[in-house]
Length: 118
Image (cartoon, rainbow, N blue to C red; front, side):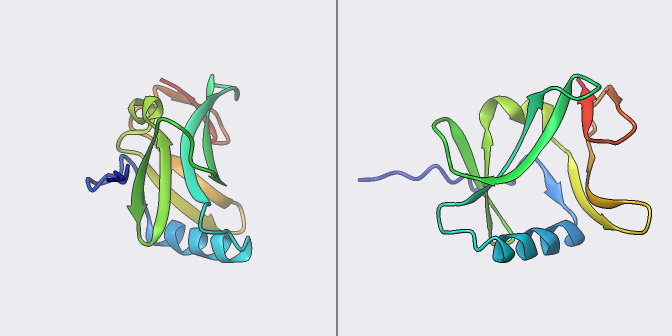
């Protein structure tokens, strides 16, 4: 009997309505196949030490899988502690366009909002 790794609990991050709409648009524009997942995480680098990772990707060993408004999301379980409670938004204004990250775990962020220290 095959087991699935889809977690029924809420994902560790939240998305605003604008972010969900943009993610659906991107997924359809990229013609993402059934094996593409939205990867959320962190990686070393950026002016504050860690930077956010948000991209369509393949599922990897050790990933936890969540479902958010019809989008399959994966996250390396080691990244959860860095993003727990984070809210991801999409801004489409004159001065700012792109995803923004409101992370309650960030002790310090850079001016662009794309990197942080924990």
